[in-house]
Length: 202
Image (cartoon, rainbow, N blue to C red; front, side, top):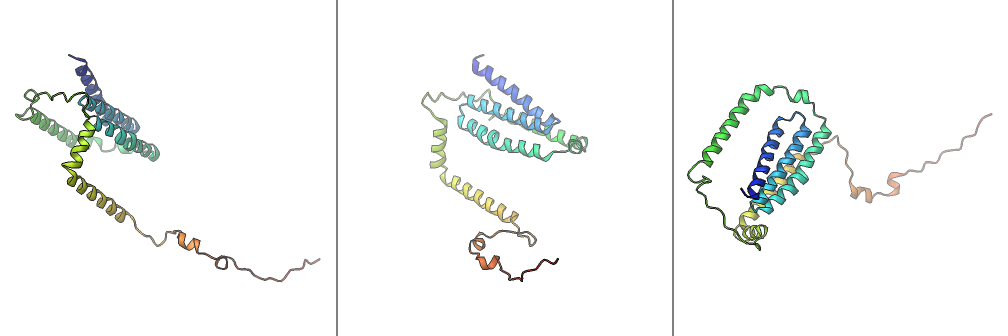
């Protein structure tokens, strides 16, 4: 067994333990931290598979942005853990059934004729000068440039639709109009009143 196999099995063991702790940890902050560990170990496995672009994207996007946001939200909301655990055992049979079905499907796929790891040839060594990121960018912007642009347009439409659905104008809310504030004049805000002077009695 070479050093790559040892590192792969080590990362796989850590990934399985971290994924299991994500769903079994009682504290949501601890579960989010275990998920960060799972992302890091998955990125390490992708690095072993020479998919460095996916590994870097996983670390930068999920660990650096999404999970930090999750941690801030979880820590700021002050979640009631007792109320969160209510009804856990009632959903356990359904969750266990779905989990068993997923395991059966994965076993059937991986043990099939086309996905059996024993019959798949080992990938050829691309060489020292090969760049997975460069090759992925070349394929993405040449062979799949139109599907890529179509996906970008669909995501843009989804963003605009989400903003339009959530932006509701309320009559009781007060807003500031910068154009009105800039165009204001002194006579519109200040009024000079002439009042007779009062004499102090006594």
